[in-house]
Amino acid sequence: MTIFGVALLAICTLIGAFLGDLLGVVLGAKTNVGGVGIAMILLIAGRAWLMRKGKLTHGFTLGIEFWAALYIPIVVAMASIQNVVAAVRGGPIVLLAGGITVVLCFTATALLSRIMREPETVHDRAAEAHAARVLSGAAE
Image 1 (cartoon, rainbow, N blue to C red):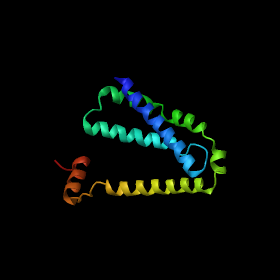
Image 2 (image 1 turned 90 degrees about the horizontal axis):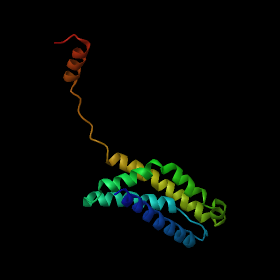
Image 3 (image 1 turned 120 degrees about the vertical axis):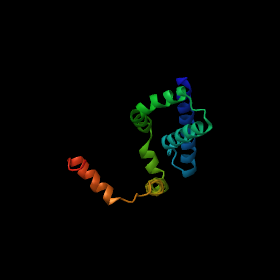
Image 4 (image 1 turned 60 degrees about the horizontal axis):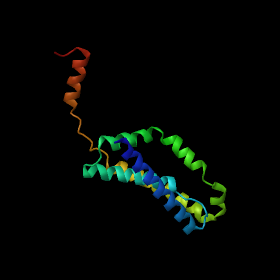
């Protein structure tokens, strides 16, 4: 049922908002720090877990895909309620945490792209030459 995918998103959003508020308190920012990002990571992890367990039904997928189509407007709406001024006034630790997060994300992306890269294939020059002749009509 589609509602299960929507329920998964709602649970992830609530947990992300709670953890973002908790992180804000710990950092002394008096605002939500990273709640939307945490919610999205939880949603990705939850979907992957359900897929591995074989419990990602068509209904779950439809519910998640429904909200995935609205992803940008939802993130913009959720981020618009964030009090950026309060976060910046919370001190330099908040800016440092944001900068470190960005650097870690860039590093993880680069590392994963290198790890997940398909092995390079050895080009068979003779086969390429024959294919070129076939495409040009010079070969039978």
